[in-house]
Image 1 (cartoon, rainbow, N blue to C red):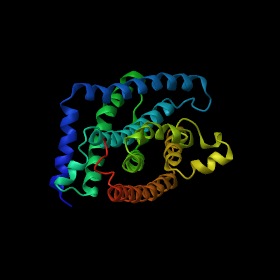
Image 2: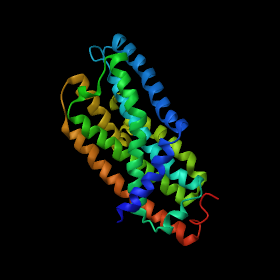
Image 3: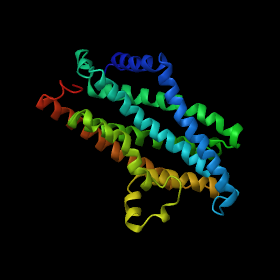
Image 4: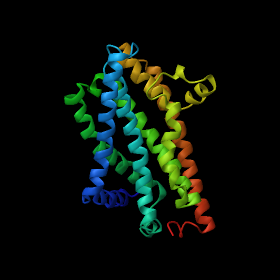
Length: 263
């Protein structure tokens, strides 16, 4: 593994972002608007809901965590799509770059993209709504880590589909998170779901992450079992995602479609 090549690909995407004001504005604008909107909704429910009474910011905290997940996943996909749209993907192998080096570079850059958009929005929550994610304490690090891993996992899944089916698969990049959101129980307890949907939800790391977030904020206690379950499922799905990515890459190369990707 050559870290120089990883750093070089990272710089390519970093310069694309840092030297383009519209790109930076796009990264900051949507998280800020969404979190501000959910902040007012959160305050409303805190005043009119017995479930959230006395606990301001449960919905907003979950909204912030979900937005971090969404930005990480879509950020990875957008970086991969940038290579396809610019017809640069096959040029990467002139270096030559390994698949593992491409993935690592995109994983690091996706995190930076997510933070560029999320940090300003988080800073607004304290003066506007008097809410801080730091109220979650030390477990917050594990929650963010789990969301980051799952976001990257989804990004790798979608990228594998792009390799296998071409740019026509890019619509899935935008819809994946919306498909999983109802089962992730982001804004409500898992008990709200029908039994058959609960079975699906418990097979996803999201439900453990957001259940634990509500548990800490509402009950003031930490259930590390939820955190461990989230990490376990994350590792499981990440291994599957990477395996599918390599399989899709090899299939595209064998069929000769890899060189025409983006055409």
